[in-house]
Amino acid sequence: MEALNNIIFSFYMSEHYFTKVILEYPNSVWRNDAIAKVKLLLKLSKSYENINPNEKKVVDSTRFVNEMGIRI
View: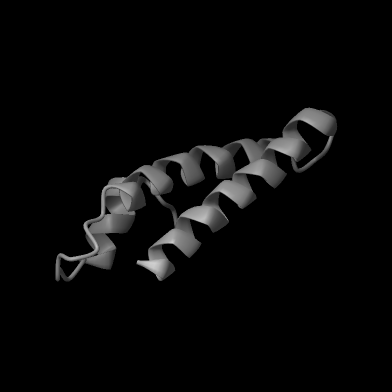
């Protein structure tokens, strides 16, 4: 459970700093990338919030990546 909490906390901290780039540096070459990262983090955090830590389930990483719309 602690690992899950650490992941979710990391998502929120990442979102915070990407949002700082978006708001405080609107002319930055990294702004569009930060916007894309925030959208991805929001999508991923919703997935992690729905995890039941007591459930023993194997996740198909290829399917997960496709469902999340992540480009590798």
